[in-house]
Length: 252
Figure 1 (spheres, rainbow, N blue to C red):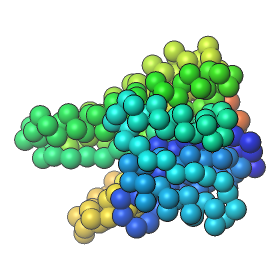
Figure 2 (cartoon, rainbow, N blue to C red; figure 1 turned 120 degrees about the vertical axis):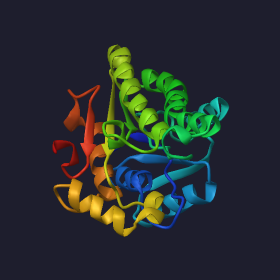
Figure 3 (tube, helix red, strand yellow; figure 1 turned 60 degrees about the vertical axis):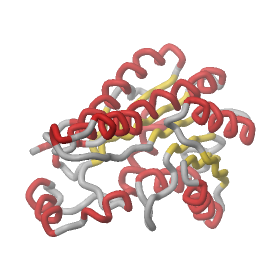
Figure 4 (spheres, rainbow, N blue to C red; figure 1 turned 90 degrees about the vertical axis):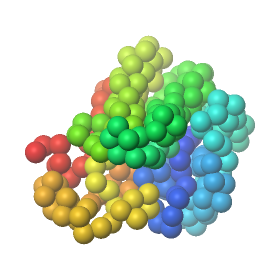
């Protein structure tokens, strides 16, 4: 077990629709690899469903309801984790999404919402979690960005906010290295997860066929495997990096 005796927070561990997305898949995999997991979600029922899946496989986890757009909630979720398990080793920031019109038609309200959801949430949870990682002698943080950070994307706020996650990851990696805290990023491409279930149109399938060398969508479990590598001892000399999980799309 690669994460035996580790304690991990997965922010965004539930699912907005039935199925297994990046956060839920990562929480399950962490537990399977021996970690005790705090499954965090704004929707407590969704977090509890993830915990039920973990426990059904013999893993250990708790569900914590928190809105990571609120600084007090970010602090609460870290305190709940440490109160339950005594320490913190790993953080996966998976909260994210998009809202608003394409291009310059986006409203200021939707721009601010998307920036807060995708970027501010990472900052707030890191601010709360890092002191506990330092107390523990170090740890690993992985932030979830998107290949939209690299490619032209109709949803300007989404693309810009995900690019910000990558920049923040680099800043954190350099700033926290002296504390033995590694910070990396995953950038999923075109994925088949509950978040995009309503987008599975013929047009999207054609896009996958044209732009993804492996000719298919990715799965939440494939993102989870990459996150696991980045928080495990196998990546002990890797920090400040962004790993595409995109079926080769970035190579075109």
